[in-house]
Image (cartoon, rainbow, N blue to C red; front, side, top):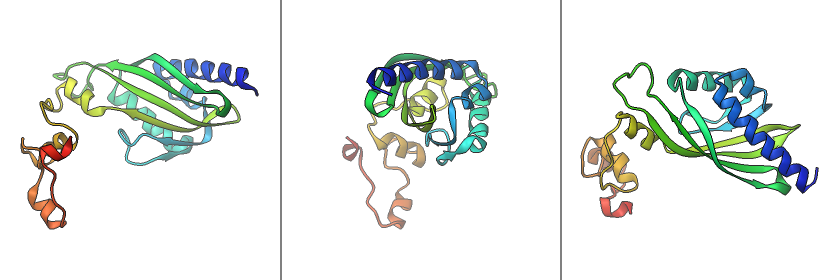
Length: 183
């Protein structure tokens, strides 16, 4: 391949990628992925996934939890000579069916294509803000003026000051950050 064909491949792949996600068909998505895919989405899943066998339950879970999620490309960026790319997207949809009182969401994220083998994606990384998504749906409280980790610590400790659970931090021998430290 050369720079022109690499660009055409990446551009075509990005279009197929979004179409596969919007199809809500796991087999269509898996067809774009190398059998030995390394899939990193630590926001939604607990660990990196490897191979179609580990990836199928992840994708099926997305269709269950986000039954009508849709994706739109905002812009794609490609490293033509290295077959790498980033697709900036908007995702939107309804809350899970199990939470009918929750509201719809619309957030941004990035699909990061790190490596291809045999014309298929072999290393993928996701980046998106699930906190904003959960706040929009009404599953989490608004973050207000809390910056950085102060918001998450306030959720973990149930305190609005952003200091989290003081006893836990003291037991582990580390100082807890103040709101000012989180800037």
